[in-house]
Length: 357
Ligand SMILES: NC(=O)c1ccc[n+]([C@@H]2O[C@H](COP(=O)([O-])OP(=O)(O)OC[C@H]3O[C@@H](n4cnc5c(N)ncnc54)[C@H](O)[C@@H]3O)[C@@H](O)[C@H]2O)c1
Image (cartoon, rainbow, N blue to C red; front, top):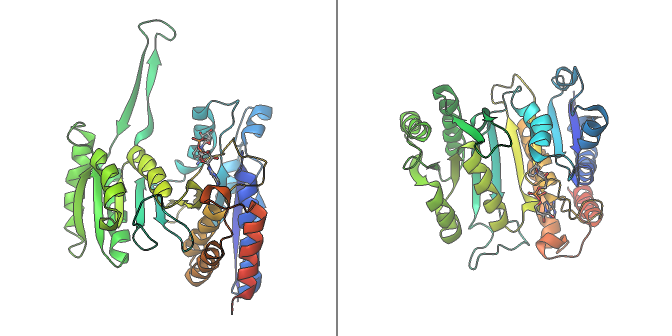
């Protein structure tokens, strides 16, 4: 019997609704063409507009309802008239943290037909997976402010590294590296300056490495990692880094692969006790919202990652193949140097899907 997956869609803010709608269009076209799985979408209007109207991003009981879905397709959250820390903690982190989506996976590669801003870096020269710790570290939410508004005001932002938290993300990263042909993992750290949490991070990485003798490991300070990504992209395969470090490195990675408009991100609960959440890496992009020019490719790759996680790996590969064909045909949005609109790219991908044999 054909399996049906229930997908919760949360387009939220800015270009989120535009790219999520494009993502659903191609997923439905793929499901119709392949007839190997069905998708049912349930739409949630949780956004900054909802917050401004009701005082809440997620209504009471909302998370319980969301738990019933097989996966979540998220757009982007952030509005010009809501402070970013309110929107991020009110919606995205309010899902990731209680659902223990501790592994954030961010693949990057140069698609056929697109160009890296780096000289001498072609498709195949940059093919990375960044594994980001997604539940603690610098985004643990620990800290506080006192003496607000006075010249002697203080604020603390405490990074949390627990042995359990580091161990589980390291094991996940080693497993990810082990499944890739090069079996190469770079552990990013800053243990020269941060002598507690990051030293624990390094020690746990060394311990976990013993369980994976077939994976080659190297260690890089985060500052040196930025130069290696730019100067020697071919020397990198899988990367594991803390919440903050990987957040920054993955935007750089996306830009080096051509644009932030192509990169996906998966917030995974590897225990599968909660649904995982899939989203493009980019934000709500105020400057282009509502203009119909947002690159939907990141959401298409996000859709492929969703299918892969649901166990529909063959369909995921077909979707990516169609997306790369469209890039190769030169149907690209402005961020990739083209002139196509969101709709034109989406229509072209649907056309490729219909042509699949
Ligand atoms: N996961 C999330 O929901 C998420 C992630 C990052 C930022 N944000 C939020 O989004 C808002 C804007 O943040 P920002 O400006 O730092 O980052 P952004 O990713 O929204 O935009 C950065 C730049 O990239 C461009 N861009 C982004 N996505 C694109 C796409 N698909 N196609 C073409 N161009 C694209 C934008 O036009 C902009 O010039 C803020 O409120 C921020 O907090 C949310």
